[in-house]
Length: 416
Ligand code: GDP
Ligand code: MN
Image 1: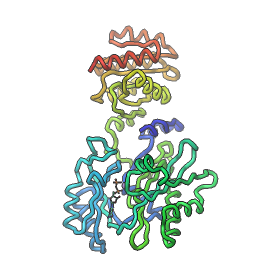
Image 2: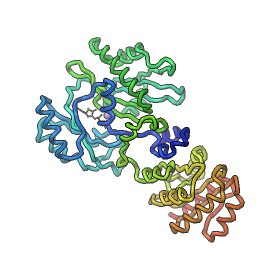
Image 3: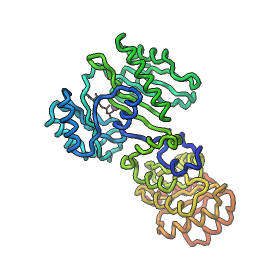
Image 4: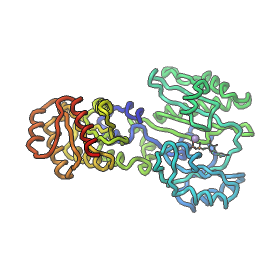
């Protein structure tokens, strides 16, 4: 979540509709594997299924082709599916059909979905692999150095965050110089660090390089193979695959953009994206409406500092229209946790009077009941304040950002 916020950028204003998709677009495992296999990364044989019939047919086909087992895998945009019961191995067609019945349509709860879980609407049916070792590979941008870092670990198949926290020395890292790229020597170094057999090294080097090429070509922001497996007959496979993409580069990849599955995203975030609003839902009680990502971050901080908790991140942008402000209000109010609204606007491109007109119209139209606190500065601020005062609605205006934050926290507490 925080990386999403920190990564917020606004480089392509002409692509405003594109910018509104999540900052790092996620895709499903089966889609990631399709992309990776085009780059020569070895993945198990398999197919996505939307219905029990499709799943049964795919399982039948794999058994007919000689598979000794198939694995039924829930496709949701979250990890930890194995532990949550969303990944099951079957040794017969009947067993596979039983797993399909149980997993398809289930509300799958993992450490990444939150307690409400995520409904499983698609499956991946794959041939099982005779796993020897479960390893880990990942490529991610290291924001501290501004370079990509290639990570490898022998502790695959488990939560890598836990490995990183408890035994950081178990994760090997190679920093990639952007001018040079990922060197074959670096791939060899990682392959040896993984404790691979001599007969597996060349295969592993090719695997690691293909993965890197896929990352670069697709403008990915993260590629993670967990587990990266070796088999009893010395083969290497990506048994799981996660890729996220940099939203700001999606305009270069219409084929990747088409892989977006809005059924997996927060409904309020999807709604916000329709109106080009940069909205990210959080768990607190104070809704925020702010212009500018930096000010939005600062607003969330000052709410916390005043003892409250933000219900969302929302940047309405510089050129917000009245319609956008109304939709923003609707989205904020659709969150049942919201107890008060904090509107923090610095009028630059967005003039304060225009904002105030939009806010008054939206508050009247939507019959807003929760308390609203504003902090306004900038162009036409006096006109803006007058519009609010004359509206007859009950707005509180803080003189400073700090005072406004304290007012809104008190208002949220009073509303409990
Ligand atoms: P995740 O839990 O969401 O990360 O899903 P994974 O795709 O990583 O699967 C979880 C675990 O299921 C893996 O770490 C493996 O131990 C196991 N698993 C997945 N596919 C297979 C398979 O084909 N054969 C066997 N034996 N185990 C598998
Ligand atoms: Mn995994």
